[in-house]
Amino acid sequence: MRLPAPGDILVVAPNFKRRLSGVTSTIVQLVPEQAKRLPIAALGPGLPAHLPKLRWRDLLRFWRKPPTKPFRIWHARRNLEMLPGILLRDVLRMPLRLVFTSASQRRHTGYTRWLIRRMDAVIATSARSGAYLTVPHTVIHHGIDLARFRPHPAGAAVARAELGLDPAKRAVGCFGRVRHQKGTDLFVDAMIALLPRHPGWQAVVAGRATAEHQGFETALKAKVAEAGLGDRILFAGEHRDIERWYRALDLFVAPQRWEGFGLTPLEAMSCGVPVVAADVGVFSDVVSAACGTVVPPDDLPALCEAIEPFLADEPRRMDAAARALAKAQAEFALAREADEIVAVYERLWADGGSAAKSSSTTGVRP
Image 1 (cartoon, rainbow, N blue to C red):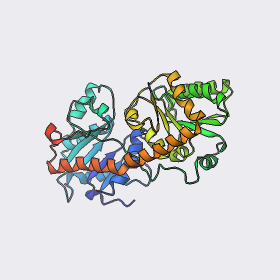
Image 2: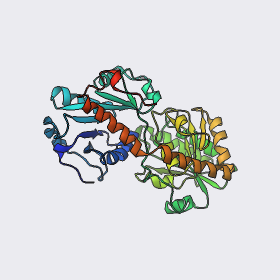
Image 3: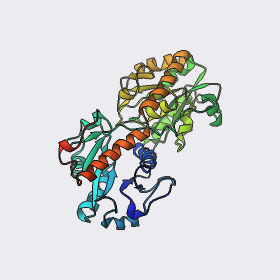
Image 4: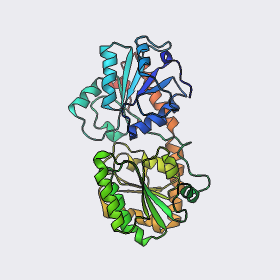
């Protein structure tokens, strides 16, 4: 993607964590879509080569206003990125306005509230996230790159063969960081209970266990081995091309104990995969009864009870898969998210940067 001249950039999307995370995934997907509408660039380490990116020294150009707008926009998604924006705007006096996207569904710390109060506009990724904010905000749900997350044209069995999985066995997956909060242990326990009764199925855990959670992952692998299911429950690790793994699935499970938003059910449904999800984040808003099942969080019996019908009843699973894909295509388009975010930027530019100062200038999207 061709990068505009640094001086022409209107929006900066900082990403200051090298480790892959949900926030990083959002930036990687969203920035190219936003770049179709306005000059935007990411800033930070560990970002893929195809993204339009700024160098740190390019920030020196930001003391001058951009040629077409009264200021640039710094769109932060973490505390780590809000603070530098405040310093650039308030200490170095650059013509910047600050936007923050909040996905958290818990009470913010005093420090985070202090940072958020200094933003010029705030976006919440769901109504639940917005309920924890004390400032005016706009609710904008995440979207998915439907060109990237789509069913395999030759079917899931071919996708499994391409990944070295058994193409003759259907696959149920749980993707994301491997840790207690993500409920990886609940998924493993459910598979240990269910797979012996369903010999035509295999399970895949895809995601990274960071250093502090490697003991957790090791214990799960030991439990799988003790159950004699080491050949049917695969720990695939972290993959940048995770869409290939979604395409190999016939069912997706999102067993999180807590989640701010959670993209994985959207990504699975966009690949034509039905979902069983815990009632956290926006999962209950995304996963309807027609395309999956929502269960209480941290409830292993309920999780097993919800998963098993999809393993046992192929017509039901196929119907839910078709409905999941149709819902994703109708509601999850990344273009819709990009349009709504750009509308927040445009309000800031039109209002001279004061859109977050009064509730009358920021709407809450239902």
